[in-house]
Amino acid sequence: MNAYIVDKDIQVIRELRDMTQDDFAKDIGVSRSTIERWEGNEVEISEVNIEKIYTYAYKHNIHMNSIKEQLYREDHTNQNHQVLFHGAKSIIDGSLAISKSKENNDFGRGFYCGETLEQAAMFVSFYPKSSIYIMDFDSTNLKGYTFTVNQEWMLAIAYFRGRLGEYKNTLQIKKLLQKLEDVDYIIAPIADNRMFQIIDTFIEGEITDEQCRHCLSATNLGYQYVFKTEKALSQIKLLERCYLCQYEKEMYKSKRQQDNKVSEDKVKLARKQYRGQGHYIDEILV
Image (cartoon, rainbow, N blue to C red; front, side, top):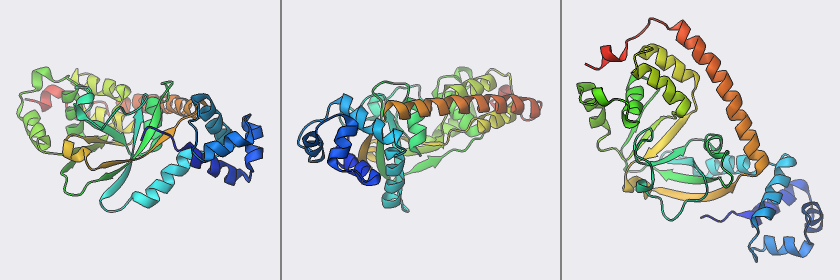
């Protein structure tokens, strides 16, 4: 599943542009016979030419990955199935494995996915060989737990990121961990490093839980799925690996920076507007 489906994508690009193989070959800078071999999946396409193909599509307003996201949602979303997206710095090497993840992630070790292609792309577009995997998740007979942007979620993030040392044996934390003890997967708001800094100010006693909650709501990045058991991983099917050309990466990087600026302004306003409301960390964990 690490090979891109370039042969079919070329045909889609030509069809949407109403182009012959000769036309496309001239625009890309290769021979017609090369395009014929590519579409017939007869030869391996170099990374340089793959970049040319998807850059050409993107420059002509054909956003292949967005199209695929919509089509996969139509075909694979139902009561027990969810289309998810995993951003990879390079490739998924071998089978999916919880052991390959870091311990200090939002919810500890697990396989992490986002709800949208944009979410996944914004997190990995800064890496030169990054790509997006589209997946089908079947939740049948699995136990899940869902967090929202609330006090419980903030405490969970702080705990798994190793910031609740002096509070880890409190009754509230023990009850929280008990809820997660037997779950196969977790659905929760995404907490990037920027959001964790806000949580950290709550843990340090600088802001209340109410201020923190509103600040985090202002920086909302959507929801993530965290797969915690091998049983959950076995119910994920890889559908396709999507290529991110440099132009598309630049678009996502720019959007991330714009979103960050808007979020920073919202956080400043939230800290001021909800000052004095809610409780400090030492009032909550006793």
